[in-house]
Image (cartoon, rainbow, N blue to C red; front, side, top):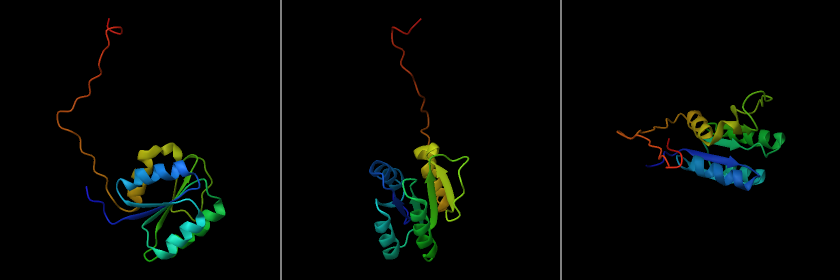
Length: 140
């Protein structure tokens, strides 16, 4: 599968979350991950991105500064702010959308794709049927 020319910047202080999100989003898009807001600012000034994903490990002020830089790009990049949960969180006025980690990896991928107007196609295998082996100790 060829990736579309959609560029996503992922910013997180948490190395494990950063690498995981790079793998998830990088499966479909050109993903660049950075661990410091200063690196993210430099990337946003040097290159155009379609989507910027900001981790909940960033301080609110850092997220706002990066979102403003993303929105100044031409055309403006979308900003997805990640939080600890999707429901019942304070609305961040600088984010185009907020998503909680409770959405899981697939939820992150789907929301990212939606925000850049990309449809993820899922192909089911014809004739595929899942079978669960029964061990002799569990058989009646």
